[in-house]
Image (cartoon, rainbow, N blue to C red):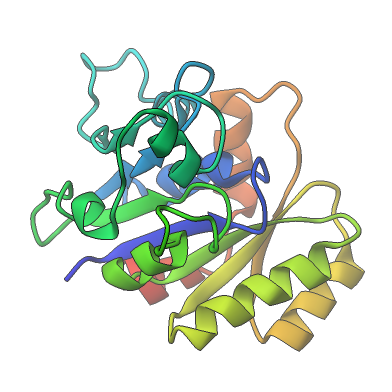
Length: 227
């Protein structure tokens, strides 16, 4: 049985990696957290594990890999859906093979970042939702704050609940929008635990200040998933 959080998004490039780093900053001193990106596509352009290490202030402190970064899994070229990136690489990803990568003691609290949204295909039959089901972790949703987010976020919540998965909360990314926040909480019956701004520049210090002051002020994630 795994414990921790699965960080998904309503879309790609919505802010999952920054949200994951914020969780590490907010609760790293209170629980034995370990970040993991099971599938990374477009590795020639992006490395979310390295970015989380940078944003969470781990880069340079110890020789890589940092013990709080679990840098194992599928790493593929081409910034496309996992199923297509795997096919282009002449390989195939399965949920079972991903879960078999996990290695940690009973104390470990996993912060697992998905690729894209919950219905992104892993292979011809399985999606990211199937991986979440296999891990059976509460889900933290990263969502945009702008127009369209109500529909996208409610659909994500519905997909998760139809699979009997628990929604731990929502983080809205972008300019604060209290009307969209109220709609998501009312129609989705899910708590928006934070409204995270776009940081310019996105530095470890800026993210740490915000995470300490404004991320999950009521400790919802700690009580519900990380304690």
